[in-house]
Image 1 (cartoon, rainbow, N blue to C red):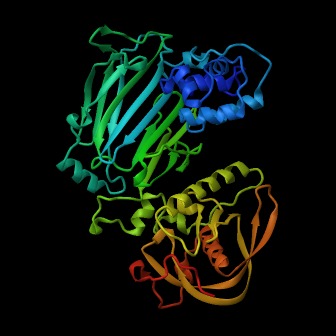
Image 2 (tube, rainbow, N blue to C red):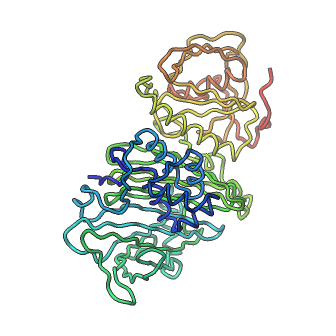
Image 3 (cartoon, one colour):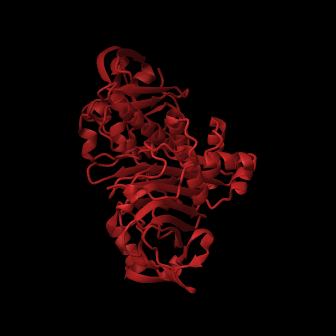
Length: 500
């Protein structure tokens, strides 16, 4: 079961005030420090947090930016606006709910910050634990697991066999309570080349401090891993009832990072994260923030990233275009999903699902556009990001975005010409593909209305390519007999428009 967090939608407390207090606690900021960061009067911040003053939309935006809550404060503000009552009862953000008391241990907030300085990753993990059981808790198990090449297990095994992760490299430190007041002793449970488990003991230099029934506390631990040992991914697995899960990725801006994520559970295949990742530019660093409430037990949330700038790569070490697309989350040729007919949306009933998939498509397009110049425009279909639903987007060279839900080509017209196309799912080659100049496409609007749109020339080619993807067809299926794709190194049309 999943415990309810204080401030859930069915709670009559001020959900925004509860969430504001929670995130200020997570970021270890005083009210005065938060007010200064937001450029607000301290008394106003205090009144909002106490539930005495109603927050404005502008205040919520500033709080979201100052606390990097990954959208949690914006969501709390929308909930507060929708369910606001006349009650002036001060919310109690620290009291465990009845559901919490039914569990022996609940993670009220699990917050991770991963910082990369160009050579080393440093993870800072903070958790607020609540003991809802009948016995004191004296230790807590943590895992440190690395995989440099998650899509090539043998290569990873070879790496860690020859160059294992060591305790000297990890340099683990742990604390109990807020502001790192009490160091925690720890003991090794498992020690493997790429995997370590550690018991954090509720004991330190000054004695023992068990977590008794009904009590709560923050624990924090931090460790480092060199870049050559850490792959471009970070996964959170929900092993205990958890009220809030949050992650921040902090990268040097000059590496031009791009980040995305997926989640899996015991009942569902990989899907986009349930809430969007937000990106904040902090000058010389870029921060990606994400959070969600009440994640189900055994769910896994995986954030991945890539760097457009890799100054340490020699020419021989540069990845192939297909490898880059794989790192950016694009499904590659050979995956069965590319040969399946995508499941259509029942609109408007599945409007929220459709919007979520389209959001993921635009996020994927943004990542890809950071590493390649698309002079002819570009498109991406849901199966290419591992989602077998009938949605695709097309971006024209002028920046216009065409969104297609349940599209079907019902008529073609005009001349037919043959020009080179590329596909993100096998980007190492380009192939000459015949296409009609005019397409009549029937598709569905988000509110369930059928619509027919006519596309011409270059836009028609882009649309035809993406509609094909939703019906299990690739551009190579249209190529003339005997004509083969050419290596991208031989292609001379990158960055230019098609000629008509």
